Image (cartoon, rainbow, N blue to C red; front, side, top):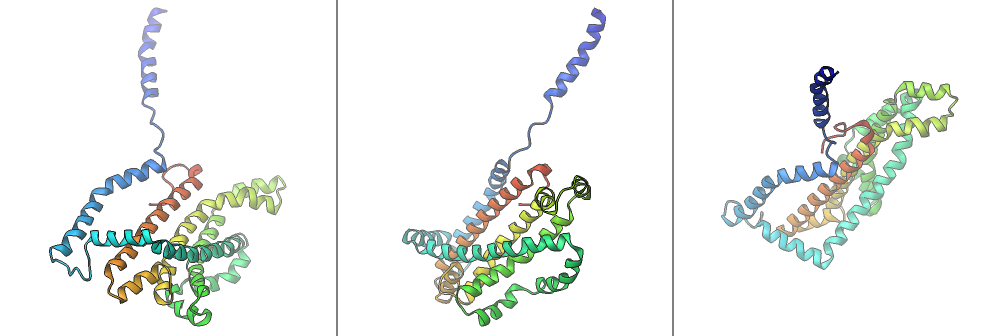
Length: 287
């Protein structure tokens, strides 16, 4: 018996070692984001130093490219005065309204096109025609038809986002496992329950990925619209400062837009990972 026990000792030790070497839990989205920012920080600092030194050393005309410290000083003045917050709020409001209208339109339409092939065949050619027409090419049309007020800016943000959401919703509906649908049907599931319990949950990751693209495109489109015809908003701030040769204010506006874009990107990445966590790590889109 002792010999048998002695022979089993190495075996038990091997199993215990294997248990100890079990890989740890995958890092969270927050820790991955912090790691990415930390690793990229030296390059960002080097870029900031170059921005500060190049105009002061005369490598670039400081009138057209002022030092970073000057831009940050103007940015701080605009923050303290509340002027920057007003422009940001107006731009985000326009983008949000257009994006929400796109969600209300595209998601139901995408479910219909993805679920019913006859409806898709009847509407696909029109959708593809509109989708391949640039929103920036149509911007003058929106202004001519809807005027220079809020309607034209909301319309361009809607147009920019709706097709990302529509196509991704269609893809999400079509990618639902047919076995799940057949199993639900075999248990007598109604169309509404099938949609609510099978199709919609399976399509959520694709819809979230489309929303991530649509939000950013909506914001960029409203900035372009504000540059062309507006009296407020970040786009107006950048364009008006450029025309007045107030380049420090112009770069402050661009820097603000960059910060907003980065924050939106990381928020949307976190939302996408949260919506797709059940698929396992590594399947969400790139940052």
